Image (cartoon, rainbow, N blue to C red):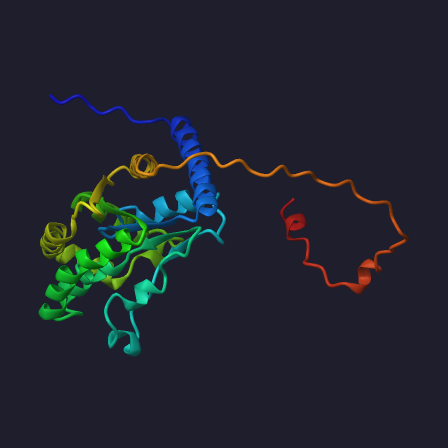
Amino acid sequence: MAKAKRRLSDDQYEAELFRLQAEMVKVQEWVRAEGKRLVVIFEGRDAAGKGGAIKRITQYLNPRVARIAALPAPGERQRGQWYFQRYVEHLPSPGEIVLFDRSWYNRAGVEHVMGFCTPVEHRRFLHQCPIFERLLVEDGILLRKYWFSVSDEEQHRRFRSRVDDPMRRWKLSTMDLESITRWEDYSRAKDDMMVHTDIPEAPWYVVEGDVKKEARLNMMAHLLSTLDYHDVPLPPIEVPERPASTGYVRPPREHTTYVPDHVETLL
């Protein structure tokens, strides 16, 4: 009988998560100081944990440096553009990090499986994508691609938990439910995508996502291991002393509209 795998305690998880988040802050300062451009792509099954990982990575980062690109469905004008065009607009400038919560790989997955693109468009994507990514890497962009994997049983459990949770039900779309009945179609599409786009210049890294906390730590630790970052000395900051009053008098409280004290009603 296989030995049961040990699991981290909540305290161990929180401690390691905070350590990794502190390292991500160092990465942020390195990216900003060195003018680096970092792109991290998050793809995978619905409910595989992509959003949770992105949330933990960006928790302590400066939104002016690290931003999330989660593009909606293309409009009529965008559908007539070169497929990669609208994604190019969201690529980072020097000193920026962009995390794609789904990306141009929509065409290899949902668009292909659901028939939102033609077979010709799908084949063209598989041909052009490696070329496009090589161009990004050649231009100096640091490109990292993560595929979050989840078993069909665990995905189904998470979908059911969202149905019963009014705070998370918004996460469950009709497209998510469709993915249950098209599990094998999505599996074949993913395998085909990997064959064409898992290139040396921009390889895919698969994250086992059945245990969300472990997936987050594993993904963050791996991302950090792929970056040759270093500590950036920060300029000293000195909080000045408050100057002496020059006679300013605050207006009477009744002249200003304050937010009601809701907390008082809870006591």
